[in-house]
Length: 115
Image 1 (cartoon, rainbow, N blue to C red):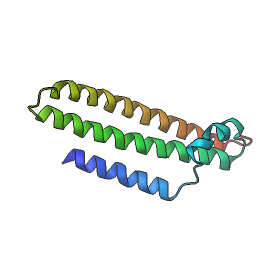
Image 2: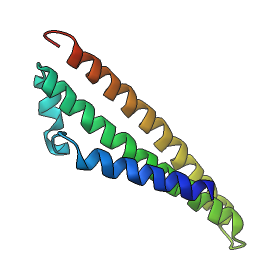
Image 3: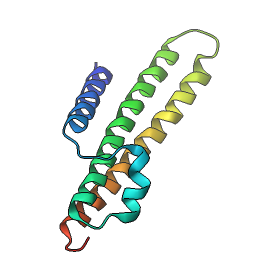
Image 4: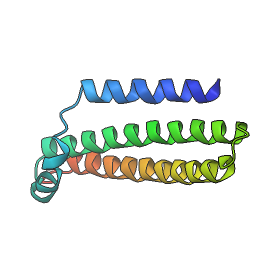
């Protein structure tokens, strides 16, 4: 039940961030990051990282559920598959944390004059 709730929360967060965002498309991020000078540009980058964090959270949740399913299964390779999913889940959690750190940094840059 807790896993389902986490998935729902991550999905709602992703939808709300996506619906109300000013984030540029992923293909434009390298250029926007290289040229960001204004608060608006830094907020756009922050929104991009917020979207990424929500996406990584959703992936982590999915892999956590998959690991549970593999561990509950009596099929031959269940333990190896669960281990793989647990590894991916940890990496997505770390990626979400890093994305949130970058989001926070760009929100702070948006508050600094000439950021």
